[in-house]
Image (cartoon, rainbow, N blue to C red; front, side, top):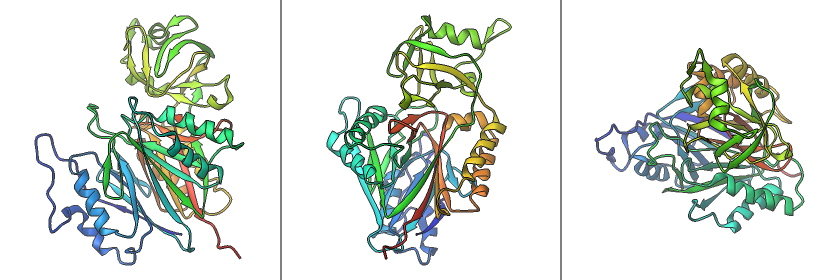
Amino acid sequence: MHSLVVPLALRPPAAGTPAPQPTNGDPAPLAGLDALAGWDDADLVLGYLPPGDGLEATVAALGRRFPAARVAGCEAVTQFVAGSLAAGGVLHLFRFDVPGHGAEVEVVPGSVERPPDPARLAACAEKLAAGTPVLVVADGLRFPAEPALAVVRRELARRGVAGPPPVAGGLASQAEPIEGEGARVFADGRVFDSACLAVALSGVRAHLEVVRGWDPASPVYTVTRAAGKVLHEIEGEPAVDFYRRFFTVDGRLAPLPETSWRFPLIVEGPAPERSGLYRSMRFFDDPPGAVTLWGEVETGDRVRLGMGNEASLVARAAALAGTGGEASPEAAVLYSCVGREAVLGDGARREVAAVHRALGGVPLSGFFSFGEIGPTPAGGPAFYNHTAILVLLAEEEPAA
């Protein structure tokens, strides 16, 4: 397998300005792709593009530029290009060396009002059960990622699959303030709201690492009332009062949710499939007396606050990237939470650079996401916050 990461120069249009118009059939920022000699026969193009009204035109242009490839991806505010950060978009091109190896893209529509088709989710589980790696990108605002993953977990359990499945991904992101216009996905010339893409890579090995880097910063407590992403009570205490105790300094409450992003909630069981999940705050005292998180919590979860900083996050990412897996990777993809970007600040670039160096310069792409999808030691795929999922890919040798 050969792969190449290409930065673009796209920018979302400013508020009140028209979307960019095609020039000779293609938006001008894509003209540079014509110089990619030797990549006309790419088999797969993963794209992470800036949110904006010009997405449809860009996706159509990519389809014309790579007519024989599967083209899939999502909107993302900040992308990874090798060891750097970018905002203008990135393409990750793949060409498979062995006949019969390649990529399949399954589009799974769904929303809270229209749950995803269980048959399509079962088809994804069947790929995972066979050991085929699946990369997932989903609409970061509308697609019900956690209920969909619950269906996949049940399907894997029904098939008797034990151990972590080879699945990883991220939710598309949009710039603040979130108004629901971005965070979409696209596949083969079409843009989708409220959908998830499952990219199955046949003939490929995947080594997955869940990158954390947060240390325990409180005793363990029990969630006594929760519903979906809303945390109502911890140890019988209203969630807002729980957070006030930890985030009040000299009689003043620190700004929330921003301050809490350095102290994510760590789930430590008792259900083994939930151990190691992180949850970050989205809204404080909304609904009144409660906090809304970016991921679901359950009544009975045992939780504690975590603490991290630039040094711990960067060091952990570099250490895991250096583990390598069973074979030297030929490509890498990193899905990292926007919460990590907020905590790291200027250090976000150093984290990506550290991962790239540890991999020896392997082509690396990815983006900061609204949530991450990755394996757990038990219980199949899970939805993470404040985490990074590192995927190392290598093509299988041809059968003798």
